[in-house]
Length: 574
Image (cartoon, rainbow, N blue to C red):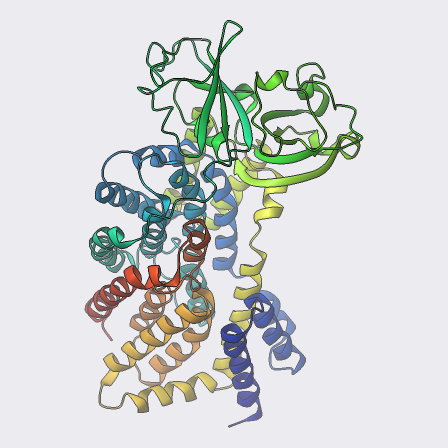
């Protein structure tokens, strides 16, 4: 073994060991390997820099940033409304298919982030019954197209870097459809074995919100119970103010009228919940259109203490709309605009363009935090965003316009029109992914150029001697699957590709079956909450334990693997 192979092998062993035994971020480990490769003159600076500007990587970054706008559209609200109707099986079927479809055209992690809130707000089913199926559906949907998951685009970047033609947009679609169908048939019955973990502290309803019944609202002349306002999860209807008179407590048979002001107690997600109820206008609704929400705390030395939002003309003074107020666990009363502000009050605000430059912020507030929640776009802007995104995808499919140019142009328009802010771009920029992919490309080049990947490929062929190319394919798939469960999907793809490619070249086989094995193996993370971002996202929210993933994920992983390993040789011959 040459000294170059020794250094690269040592780096691989360090990366895998640290990923398994430490909490060091993968980005640091891969960046360190690329740095060592440069310092030892095994890779040139120009080659190193070009790996960070790979077209597939840039496409992935643009997709993640554009998805910020997609998350704000009414499409997410519509999906959320669908999962509130029907029994558990039909809800999971609808949730799975809609999630898979959304995940096939945009980053599946962004889809899960967007739908977690809708699932937490659904009124019929415990979130823990739906969140693992949501994650699995997003993973399965991500295998439908080339842009469905970051892993697919990362693998495509390795393919291009190896001098092979770029993968077709629909290259994995047939196998993806098969595993989606088989997966849903497994997940739906097994979901009944998931726990019914209700979120703790159901009586903790910190935020105070206000909404008004619109003149032609479908809620008019119906009771509170008929409108479903008594069964809202983590959102309690505390008062109704009608013609200056307060109705409290609110009875299920209280009939609502146009102009009624409804006062709710709930969490931050309640802002979106109220926006999604037809005929109900949230306090400050006319000023909400896709902006990110922020949380501010009133200072002890604030001049606004002892005054109401109306008396200080909060919106004009700070260029921000208050949509919710919290004062510890105290239940507030009266209209939102008439609440006297105290030191320590937490306000959820939707900022305008000049909010962040207001010189009064430091004096009036002791804390200014960005929230992950955003106000929904109105119908026209939602439609425009969705049509524009589909036009970009359609143009790329028809070969009329490269997807990277289309996404770059769309992102510019979204920023110029204010649908996406620079603060959101900074907060959501996938720096870790850029570092991992750019560094992993460099590591893959080192494995191939040093001959290490060819030597490992020979070991694979020797170990599976007598099994032929199909045995090698199964070995590559299982190697990638195990790495995915242990060290995350992107790292698994980065470590597996050079080995699989060298194995295909040395045996004179077409690399495509092995590439597909890595593509589907890197997305086969169902047994562990740590291998895939979407699994980790729902882990805490659903209050799950590892056994919950094993109970549903192990049978799914077995069926998924059988379908994939059965179809790859048929559709992609050696």
